[in-house]
Image 1 (tube, helix red, strand yellow):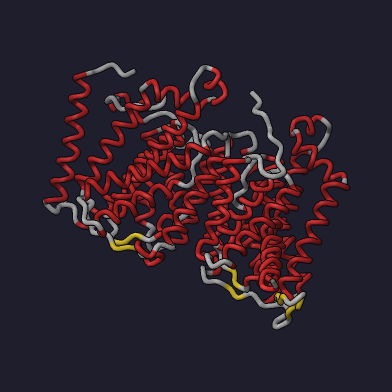
Image 2: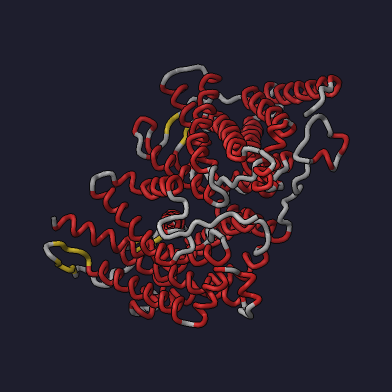
Length: 315
Length: 292
């Protein structure tokens, strides 16, 4: 359990508000133009995706390679609510996240009883089913996609990110989080200690799906148009790379590598083939020569004690 | 009646292709417990090698098939040597991620080398059809089926009747014990990759003949479905992969035949979820208790 530390909490709150205010000022005053606004949105959404998979892969140790499926569920649910039913954006965002959570439960409850690679295969299958189904629903435009109003702003993005980060950090340090980590380390041993493994795996999976769905809503309302092709295997893979490259089990690692890779891929936007060759090569090389990822399962704060702001990680 | 017989034959031909690919997945999984995601791309490379052999070098069907199998086998062995061998004792997650990375690397290098546009496969026997009890199918489909069955019989003979096959079965049963018995584990694993990849390459060529169109991403969805076939049959089981492939091929054809062709690609994955729910060890798999 985390002991209440009012001073640290106050400082953290100040930092959170300050970061928001600075970026908001830069955007409103147009010091940062549309291009940089777009870069910030992309980075933020990818960070949210990375930390949502971090809950599943980093904390619970479950290999999900269909995360784009939950992103798609969130994106399409929220897009239908705003574009077709004219509901307010926050309601749509929340509904998208809840829809993804329900999808996570639907797929997680039967498959998380199993161990090993089966979850990987099942999530992959789930993402494919979602994609093919969306392709065939005329209501959401089929393969041509669906037009979505541009509603995602820095405020929505930042609030979502802060909520997700606080929730995940607190989860990690709670008794439930410890139990989840125990499952990651050794499922059989954890069960022998009385940890209900399936329950915690499903819980982690549902939380991960929820935030992926939230990211989906932000993604949909940032890009003007969404198509099933945006949520294919490649997207799942991209999210997976964020977490693996940062170091499985490291929240800050996932955030750093999501930021870095998003910037790299924006820089290489005009050379899509080269980008993917570099991407896959980096991934293979990291796996072969630094299998624990950039930060291992440590956090940035364990390298830079000055940053220890109630932020924390697996250890 | 004849329409259904025709659909049945089409389903069996399609299933034979899935079965050939599924064999590669199941053999590798049986021996090193790795989902070799790059296998779908070995299949794709096989298709392209066969394509160039048929069109640019004007080789016949059988020489082209052999060249494609040889190149695929070499590619499979190289992938194992370069990417997977170091990770044999690493956590499974790392090997799986590496496999996905290798898969994308092969796809995008292919695109970089020749572009992403599809290629049109030449037909072997244009306009020749086989009439059978009122059903009529392309003669190519018959050749595909015969080739696939022949290759599967050869594989079965290698695995069951030769010393190498015995070594493969031993390593897949217990790698450490096999090593202690003097079996060269590295060599056996390399041979398994070679055999599985050769079958994948052959599947690529006959897939090209059947669908007449190939492209650098053809291995992704087909590979995933073949993997589902392997899981359905019981991953690690060679007869299971054959039966699983046939079932997936038949179900897909049936789904198309009753008019839901748009959902054809989802059918295999629905089967996957169902099999994971009710019989995760697959049709022919054995239930393995967890060892601590």
